[in-house]
Amino acid sequence: MESIIFSSAIAEDLAGYISRQDFSQLGLIMDSNTQVHCYPLISNKIPNHQQFAFEAGEVNKNLTTCSAIWQWMTDCGFDRKALIINLGGGVCGDMGGFCASTYKRGVRFINIPTTLLSQVDASVGGKLGIDFNGFKNHIGVFTEPLAVLISDEFLPSLPHEELRSGYAEVIKHGLIQNADYFSTLKSTDWENQDWKTIIEKSVSIKKSVVEKDPKEAGLRKILNFGHTIGHAFESFYLDSERHLLHGEAIAIGMVTEAYLSYRRMGLPQEDLDKITEMLLKIYGYFDFPNEDISQIIALCAQDKKNEGDVINFSLLKKTGYCEYNIHIKLNEIEEAIAYYISLKN
Image: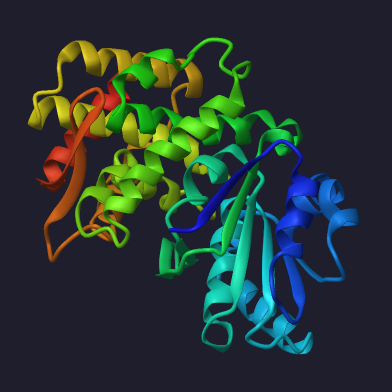
């Protein structure tokens, strides 16, 4: 398991960590947003390094950008003792880590997640990957970073929508593993919380699951609650003007999959109502035309958790307890989406 370092002084802690490592060259990968808002917080403390910045956005998490990163690494003459720093959100950590772990069969890398989403979710577990032909995280590997440095110093630079996107994964952690934690999360004035404590709690929940099941053979699948239908919505609207942020799509996924939990797992009606109310209060209702539904359902069949023609879900038995490998049919997914549509005011 990678080393996770919670920092209140990211520049100093990063410099100290790097000074203890043995490497030949140092490279830093970031996107156009973190180049402006986050890189200046650490730049004067990092020893001599090469930089690569790509255009921000999930739409650029693809093989074309990877080719540019691999070419940059090659042009810089990085050898297998090079060390890469990935500074950014989930896109940067996923893609930078993927490129590092495949360049010359693998060079070491450090992740510095700068969004709430990447800090509580993508920072833990060594899942790396890129999108391919409209399928999210379709190509990838499991490789642990050398270390992950997490600091809430980056959060003030986030747009409201990005902070809210990350909050969906925080909510999910409570729903799948810790009902008491879920009950402490705010649905009104949620922006004003003790983020440092929330990040540490969410990371501890994810870390405890991943340590028991690093390669997603079983228990780790519970982290996918809300993601089968959520990823389908995210993938369908990925390249459209109605593009959904990851957390916005997962919010839809958690409402619909909470309904499936109610129908198939005996999730109490009271829990379903509470989950639905909270998510609608924070994320609102996403309006979409009926003609999109069949294609969204078809995308669920491409989910990586599936085995053959069986669509596997992770569903709630109750708030704080999730089970995995629940087989769901296409007509049940359609019914869950119909439930979501019924919530439109």
